[in-house]
Length: 177
Image 1 (cartoon, one colour):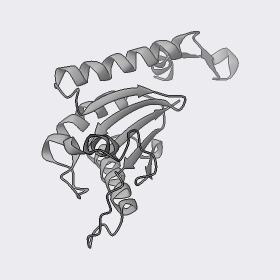
Image 2: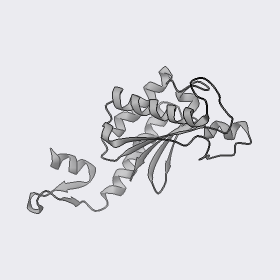
Image 3: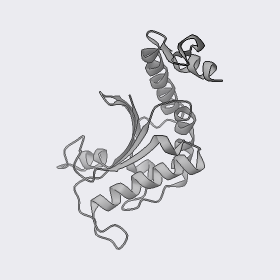
Image 4: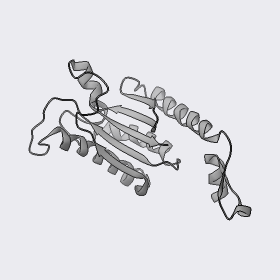
């Protein structure tokens, strides 16, 4: 089983080296290309190009999901349709050995409700609910998942326009290197 999984993920188990994994050359790069291809296919098949994108950074691969596909305004409760998309993303993530970080982000418009007295609370609530759904409902290994709430402090666009604020309200699923 170890050998088969190693072959799938680009390593091989060698009993001659006391079970140490031997790198299979460029397999990390091949796995990265395969992962990006699978996520891009998922995005195209579900016609969600305007709401879901894939970004490669020094940390790894980020599946960026804008908040309107996952949540209603000011809420951290997952929408029904979002669960379909998360189910398909989980199908890809479950087969990876990488750690996964779920990151919640907001724009800079203040929130103040009983449930979410600040954007910090909202960003953490969204990351937490997304992570719990992926772990509990989709079987992502809990020991590989972590959450982070960035509030408004890690924008990808200007908060001066409605379009920019919409891009900043997101959940990033980061597949760490």
